[in-house]
Image 1 (cartoon, rainbow, N blue to C red):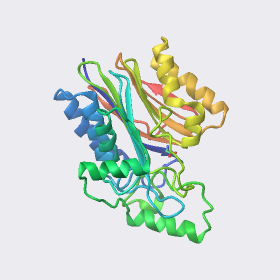
Image 2 (cartoon, protein in one colour):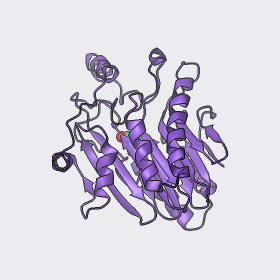
Image 3 (tube, rainbow, N blue to C red):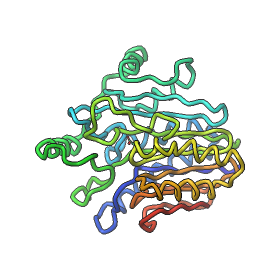
Length: 311
Ligand code: GLY
């Protein structure tokens, strides 16, 4: 079957008129092109997801890997997870530091019997694998944290998307990739630096089944306020609805209507086994792009409010 792909680079307040939209679109399409080429060449959904996450983690405009936000103590702690829909297997790392690509740790853990590691365990795994020590800190994130410190941490979270003054280096957000390969296998990966300025030890949704979930029927990656995503158990909720027979577009629509009524702030991207691509958001903007096999599209210009869609 024709492979399908959707990726996101975060959700948050609107980019409209702020100068960052085109740069974010270019970054998303660049990643889509590379990952879709791999799928087209016959790679598995899981391999494609890992490549997509790595590319997005390496792009400093997104809040994952290089360019991750800083927590309240000025340290970076990243989380990432990978789920193989075919065998319904989740793996991930929570609050890991000093690694270039957290998704590669999640990938390694797919094969083990202990599949989710937190800070100390993830650091030990890094040593075991001989991964070089890497500092994901960027100047923009350091400046952002220093400004917040001077302001007594008045914001609840760091910027997750492009800001006007960052037009030359715009766009930051949690990242996620969902793929359906030519053999009909689904996989999903999500990676984040967290909200920024959070309490030490706060755990993101991105390495939980609330933020990243897949089975043979559907796969979903979430972005936005992790606490809201966990309260809705969003990714697993959508996947279970599809598993129980609801078409993906309807599963997204129903889940986002419910979330909107509870004033949640997040977005999600999804694929189902029949090749339907879908997205949804309660936040102002969802930075997502997709490839249907025939055409590319994005969600950068959706209306404000609760919006879901599919193709
Ligand atoms: N969704 C990313 C976070 O809240 O940490």
